[in-house]
Amino acid sequence: MRSFSRPELVERARPLLGTYVTARVSANSARSAHAAIDRAFEAMAEVHRLMSFHEAASEVTQLNRCAVRAAVRVHPHTFHVLRSAARLSRLSAGAFDISVGGRLVEWGMLPAPSTDLHPDPAASFRDIVLLPERHVRFHRRLWIDLGGIAKGYAVDRGIAALRACGVTRAAINAGGDLRILGRGTERVCLKTAERYPQAHATIELQGSAAVATSCGYPTRWPHGIVWRTCHVAGARGEAVDPRLTASVVARSCLIADALTKIILIQRAAAANLVRSLRAEAYLHRPDVAGSQWDAIGVSP
Amino acid sequence: MKSRLLLLPLAPLALTAPAYAVTYLTVEQAQTLMFEGHSLARDFRTLTAEQMQAIEKDSGVRVTNPNLAAWRDDSGDYFLLDQVIGKHEVINYALALDATGVVRQLEILDYHESYGGEVHLPAWRRQFVGKKHGSPVELDKDIKNISGATLSCGHVTEGVRRLLSTYAIVLAPRIG
Image 1 (cartoon, chains in turn brown, green):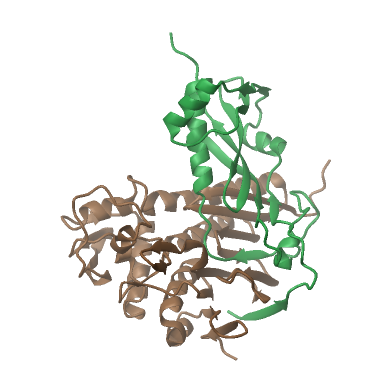
Image 2 (tube, chains in turn blue, yellow):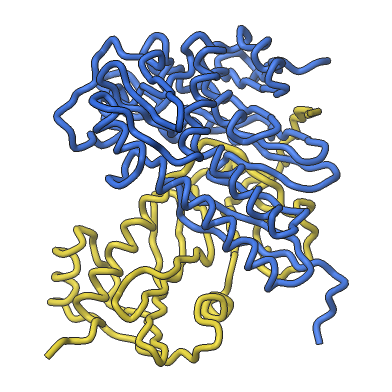
């Protein structure tokens, strides 16, 4: 018979949310670890079904097709992400803006939704109106893309599902947006946009936390002669510098995920916002001789 | 929240390029997980040139391997084993289809990253070499977490599309 005194470690991976998602769980038995991971993957798949830009049946697609004509009622998860996005847009003066879907379609990074309603170039997050009873209405023609925030939220849902199963030690990583559950010191290695890094950047954490990283390298795309990343500076509608890498430590992965985009755009100017969200950020700028990491909103 | 950024030095002799590799499940573990309580019988096939062409036409995905690794259970469900090769990665995965050919479950078995020709491989990748599911490792002590820009899962998505066409053309029971 197998002894149950030693915790079983199980790690599994699935393609979800457009990337590879891994869930690692330490539990009393392999069976209970697998059962908890099944629940976590289900919770994350639900976020994907609701919020994917690509899925014709998602609520995001439904909003992009219908919300300018009439209010659309959405799932509590979708409403929560839209409300969080609206708050982050306000706090970042529009640097974070989920109405960038049209620009990403224009750049060839997202497929055009099947609708004859093309986005109004003047549209912004201010045209997304959240109404009572989880209704959403657009005041201008626009396409929202939750790619900058929903993956983090999915990780939070996955961790919540694990906790509901009684799991106390785990990690979920959705293509670099990760959250750790448990006590003790953890290290998270950061991949930067640098091809030949001079050192391994590692974030050391105390206890449960989320870490998200965004950088230009794997997502840059030839568009004319300019190399663009998939990250749009909301207020200006321009691509962010593809050489930058931003990593954010936060209590929730939703906040960490969204804040990376704000850091790529506002850099050190976002320090107060980072502190007010009780997060910590690190920005890598390879253009500075000797590979420079700036700590943003981190108390010395 | 308290975090600290450490810049750990590169190992000076990291001149060979062992790739980052991780195994999540063995084939047997995946079969147990996906077909608990059912016995699976090997139903391996070799695709004909015509079948490969038909699958390519139907799925829009290139078929390079004529060997189809399939297992069938007593109720007509299938366990399919497949490999996809991306620009930077090789992935083995398992797909469970129900008796009507609908995807029931997908599990990635292993993931191998390859950086052809690059010799300055970060030393932390090497810690993963030889790590297997079930090795006596402490959670997050031996295997570190990695945070970086998102990798697309497009190749597995294409692989699934190819397998669904393969099922329809090769494995699905013929009516009448």
